[in-house]
Structures are given as C-alpha cells and as structure tokens.
Image (cartoon, rainbow, N blue to C red; front, side):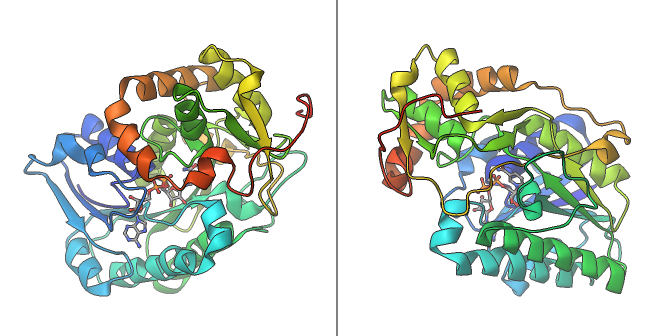
Length: 342
Ligand SMILES: NC(=O)c1ccc[n+]([C@@H]2O[C@H](COP(=O)([O-])OP(=O)(O)OC[C@H]3O[C@@H](n4cnc5c(N)ncnc54)[C@H](O)[C@@H]3O)[C@@H](O)[C@H]2O)c1
C-alpha cells in the first residue's frame, strides 16, 4: 500500500504515520507538508532513514508538487489544514486557501490516478455548528459558525461533489476535539499543561461552560485507519469518544492531575461566536467495529506525562508561540468567581 499523508508533520497526521507503521509491514508513506507554524519535523524523526518513507516539503495548493507526490498512490489521507479557530477569526483568507482550494487541488489530481483506492478527507465535528441538547448524526443540518469550520465544510463538500460527479472514492470523517502528545501548544490541553509546568495561570475563555467531546489521538487514528479499509465511498463518518466535558471541568481535571488548585485559573475574554457545545453520535462508525480505547482521565494522564518528559520538544515551540494564547487570545484576566461552569 502506498500512502500519501498530507499535513503529516503536524499533530494528528504524524500520529497516523506512527499508527500505520506500527500496524502494517508492507507499506510506503509519502508525507507532504508545507511545514507551517504548527508542524514539527521531530514528529517524523523515526522514519527519515527508512527506505519506505519520503518527506516532501510543499503546499497542497501547488498543483505541480501535488502531481509529483500523488503518482501511483493507493490511499490519500488529507490532514493538511489551517486549524485554529481564533486565527481564522483574525485572518480567514489563509483558511479558504488551504482548507478549500488546497482540497480542490488534491481532488483534481486524484482524478488522474486511476489506481487510487481511497481519498480520506479529514473534516471536523465543527462543521455542524453547536448543539445544546442531544447529539449530531451524519444527517444533521450543517451550520458552521466560524471561518475555520465554514472552510472545512467547503473542502468536505467539494470532496463529496468529486465522488458524485467523478466517482472518486472519497470518504469524509468528522472527528471531535482531539488531544494527546505533540499537539501544538495553542490548543487548550497542551497550552494549559505547559502553562502549569511554567507556574503560569491557565486562561479559561468566558465562564468555561463550553462543552467538547474529547477524543484521544490514537483513537482518532484507529478510526481513520478503519475507514481507509472499510469506509464506504461517498459517506461521512462521525468520530467521537463520548467523553463530553465542559472546559471548566476539563481545567479542573488537569489541575488535579498536576497537583494545582483553582488559584491557577484566570477567566479571560471569550472567543466571539464561541460554539457552546459539540456532541457526536458515532454509531455509524461503531457498526464497523470501532470503539475508542481511552477515557478522558487516562488520556489526560498519558498526555501530561508526555509533556513532562518531553520539554525538549515543547520549550522551543513555546518560545515562538503567539503570546496572546498564554494569557487569553481575546483579552487577559477578567474578575469572576469560580462556579459558573456546568
Ligand atoms: N486537532 C483537532 O482537535 C481536530 C479535530 C477534528 C479534525 N481535525 C482535523 O485534523 C487535521 C489535522 O489537524 P491537527 O490538529 O493535526 O493540525 P496541525 O496544525 O497540528 O497539523 C496540520 C499540518 O498541516 C500542514 N499544512 C497546513 N497547511 C498546509 C498546506 N497548505 N500545504 C501543506 N501542508 C499544510 C501544517 O504544516 C501542519 O503540519 C485538520 O484537517 C483538522 O481540521 C483536527
């Protein structure tokens, strides 16, 4: 099997590379990544000496480089994306370029690959918008509420249109919030862990009432792997772990696991249009035999241990991090009492 993994130097993409190398012997992996701010070549270090691995620095919007790396590929998994909601509010156009035009460029080249078995478009649960009660199924109405999720939906629906129009074997995944080792530090879990390791308070947006369904990265990868083999072309699959938690509860769990108390919380200005709750019904995927291995507490422990043990990885990253993340992207400390959470 020859894989093209785009965005493979980032968080989930590099874990997917680990996952398939652990699981399969007979494979070749090409990673295409532009090495944007969240990429880290350290993530792929174990593979650079292997003859069945190739890394190409390039942009998925570049049709020439895409044509070169896609030649004779069996499976494309497109992780490459601009992913940060806060950044998308500041600068939507880079999201349109990568998350829509980039997907188009990959799909267009995929049409030339007659032997292509699967094109997996990694989408997100954020394409549904928020849900206050119940859970989203794959048939739910799609109402993305920020430029990131709207761009991801654009790319995802374009992928679907290539299935209908050109019979491209496309499968689309809508994964929930993913965490684990090597996530870029602007994400809430690694940001809070590394703030606490530096004795810096953690910035909780608003009252911390937003609810997310937390999926450990290895579980996200096992679902994607299953779908490369058993996903039905043209179909969308939710990937959720049923580990829902408000941001304040999540913060309290991290504090407890790191022997800190609530004096380490700063409530800060909320994100504009912040989705209140995401929740996924993943029964379609589970019917194929998938189930997540990690409950939130175990995944958090594993993640905290990794950041404790791997300062060499995250300290240089933190030095370059946009400082707004550390204190509150939309504004620093607000006077507020704890207890506003769910
Ligand atoms: N992290 C989550 O919670 C989550 C949840 C659901 C879905 N997703 C999706 O999973 C995918 C990966 O997310 P992640 O958290 O690993 O992000 P990440 O930022 O860690 O990785 C993205 C990678 O894509 C690369 N990239 C960006 N633009 C590119 C371009 N134009 N050409 C080539 N490479 C480019 C970056 O350099 C980076 O290495 C994204 O498609 C995201 O929408 C993420």
